[in-house]
Amino acid sequence: MSAYAAASSLMRYVFLALLAYFIAVLIVRSVSEYRCLRAAQRILKLSIHWIEVLEPARYRGRWFPLAEDNEIGSGADCEITLPKSKMKTRHARIILRKGEYRFSTKQKRYCEINGQPLIRRETPLADGDVVWVQDVCFVCHKMRAEEGDHA
Image (cartoon, rainbow, N blue to C red):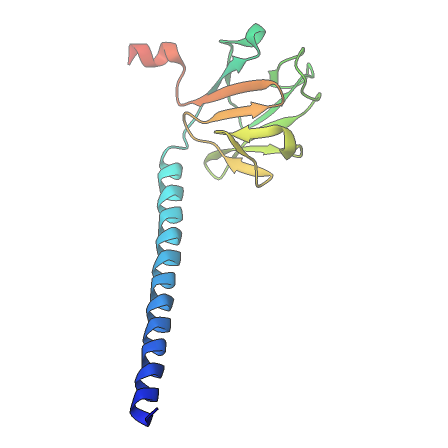
């Protein structure tokens, strides 16, 4: 094998390695930009003011207005009270923080948002998000249905 053949073989591998590196960088940047875009879209949608209970059936159709700090649980002192559910007395909270409502709980194991298990203790909420807390399911809304019908 001549020096020229060895050098050309080496250059082929260097070229393939550089090509693989640039493709990997492009993929990582694309994923990062997609996440930033999704975050920006989510921030634009974050103005919610109501939650509507979908499950369990005995609470279906109940609407709760959101204040700055909303306790969710089976306790009578919660702003969102569902007494005969499987939730703890004070199971979770919806908090207004820096202009966005955030779902917060210590019991991540029993909560889902839009079918995805919680990853963080606090998760931002947007219009249309479906939240499961134990056996309770509710939807976040910008406005109550009657308000939307008149607009």
